[in-house]
Image 1 (cartoon, rainbow, N blue to C red):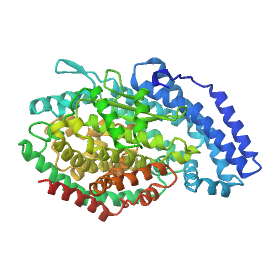
Image 2 (image 1 turned 90 degrees about the horizontal axis):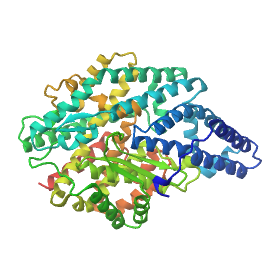
Image 3 (image 1 turned 135 degrees about the horizontal axis):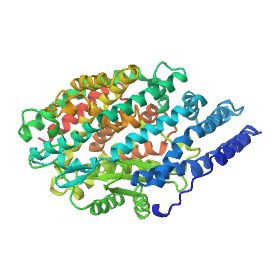
Image 4 (image 1 turned 180 degrees about the horizontal axis):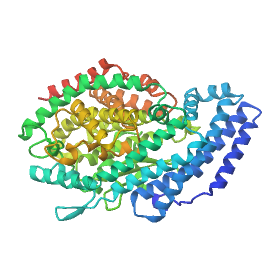
Length: 561
């Protein structure tokens, strides 16, 4: 089924609820463990293909054109219907946990599903439905505001996503003026951004307190499915990043400044790494996608048929255009058991990175498509990002087809950029912990805290008088802080594991790939720490393991000089 031919149909909410109740009654009436298993699988199949499928399809089509009124209305409908349906889903979770056949179900499906179910019960009460709807509406408002950006620059009207190539222009005057233009748009909308976030923090705190928490943090951990580590472990992790990664990144930035002939890296220099220009992909978006197909077919049997299915069925949308939502993602369409890849190509190396990154997500979803129940197919967010970030590195042998004679430069910039991300991603998470611990803080206090954390995690960066950023407002540009709170540390944990895969692939590519596919195929059958242990990866929560990964990068870069 081609994506353009997939029919969207909003189900009747009352009928959905009645059907779920019918499945629940059959589950509760089960006389044997097998009857209970069959009833749960039937419910799971219905919910996946007749509810979540249409939620996913509506969100994808709205992101493709945020001005499409039909799908804007459908997303609004689901933003309100989702919390209502969560009540019915929660009743099923309770029945699962209280089933007289629970030991048999655990023997069939493993205990992680039940650990996650216990967590899920801690995230919801019928009392919070209206607050969840308000939270969804605020997320949509932020996304819509970002997507509405139309900035006059270089004789054109550009979206935020279209500025990427200007930030990497060899002319410092162009880089500076592009940053000024984007900062101007953010400054014009800064008060509105503060207003939206004030409301978000307030409603999330209210939800948490209604559920019995002191603040939103522990609730956020449960929402994110964190079933094997807590905030104290993340705090220890931050120490390892500050001790072993920040000094390495600071060294990278000194070397970058020397290469491009400046005393210290300014914000408008931050994305510009080489005096003759950053590595840029050669060819049009169509040519990039064509080489992407060749790459995945050459990569081996695990990816060959998969990439043909995605491309032949229009399951990619990568070209930037007015009204299209920013960023990139991979979604899943349960009725067809197929992923969908969304991106915004902008003429930078990021076009290749987002292609490989999101296809890593897509391959993981594809490999897990037949696992039942879907609870076991749904891995945690931190695990999911290993799938995507590691794929970026496994694609290295095919980079010459994307970058030609700039390939070696791409290798250097990709690994150094991957390491450089780690302090930033950790800072985003640290900031959010502070925000929700200090939920009564004013916008000015939040901006001051961001500036304080910048000094700890990015001491090498100079905002050079660009007022919006100088005032500690950079975080407003980070959509996850608004729409996916506490997600960002998942990227950081996963990036470390992906770099470990990269280091092992330098020694034995096939062995590293086999470990990677083993991780994908395990899907959500174990916890994050259980999965990485099974894959032979080190825990990221021990500082010495962070140091070992930093040392591996340092050694590789040193051998190339």
